[in-house]
Image (cartoon, rainbow, N blue to C red; front, side, top):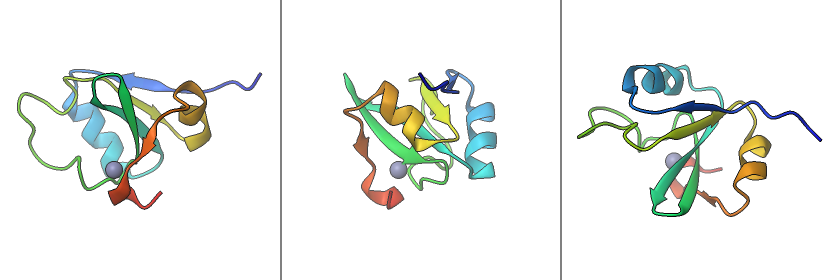
Length: 83
Ligand SMILES: [Zn+2]
């Protein structure tokens, strides 16, 4: 079995935006209850200020898209990321 490397960020927008600004990799976001959406790090949805915070729901980060698809096979690709 392949070893996957997934980082979870929750309630830490500084860490999340530092990672998205670097622009390398992919992440999952629970866009509605029980449903994950797959984004690129550079996704335009996740810029600027969020209320209460962008990471009030956990974000699952990985360098490889396949790692995230393995843990969340039903994840919906974000239309704005052009995945
Ligand atoms: Zn996106």
